Image (tube, rainbow, N blue to C red; front, top):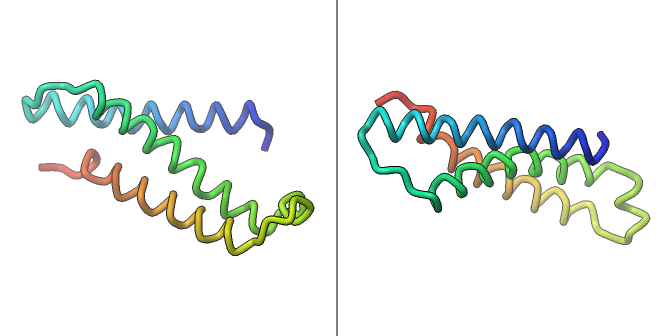
Length: 94
């Protein structure tokens, strides 16, 4: 996956989570907050970045940089988990 493809995926997923935040907030009558919106967008970016870090654990390029695969696995799982948990409330119906 090229850098441009990764950036496009991050932009798309980040925008989807941000739009879910907007719709959820407007439906509930909650005042929109710039910091919450930005956090939602970055959550979407993290949903893309987490699996890429997991992929880095088995990617031979990572081995050339003397980075242990365990570090990629742990960081990838952590980023993916935290960002999915952060995005879930926006997709739940209330």
